[in-house]
Length: 304
Image (tube, rainbow, N blue to C red):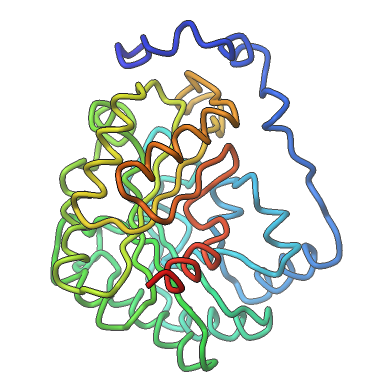
């Protein structure tokens, strides 16, 4: 066990880790008509969603609301982060028809706010940036007024790749920091904490007016002090919107949950982030980077 877990060994929730999820993490799994309709449309279009690939706990809730986060560039990732349920296998060829299929499905679902993410594609010269740009433009051309948020990988620090995405005029650029600096070697061995911060800063510096967003998981063994430091780092590097959610172990070969944060502790983390300066924060057990993304953006836009 990492030394970063020491602050959580005496948590009153620690027994729940052995017994299973605590009561506040038990969620109804609706399977109504809207959910089946979204699933069918995605299947017919040959599209992937991070909702399905990453086993998101909000998947059925979002499907019932006719919303989904599209995952482009295939379902196989070139990295193998120990928290992630997305498959790490040889990557798929880039599908040139995918942007239009995403745009067509957005129209069929009557979406006004769309989140687009991807697996990490270190095998591609631009990390998949040009494909992101094609998808953004296809969606924007498909319907007037559709907002597009992109949740991008780090592109190995390539500023040109970031420029390609930003030039397509997304409404939000999201890049998840995922965890605190001290846990990167354990949780994200192929990523770099400072590289992710630099990406956020590059959005703020080179594309002023374009909101930068990031998200972090808790429950991997971090301390409250490390979380405060990470929140401060993100804010100092120009992050506008922050999401904080509970890490859930996808399968036995993934990192175990070191702590289940209570709803009250998530409220404390939200207050902490606001004290640092964040105006837009979503913090809760079921919060994920794209959960209620449109609401967070609209509130930020209204505040501006």
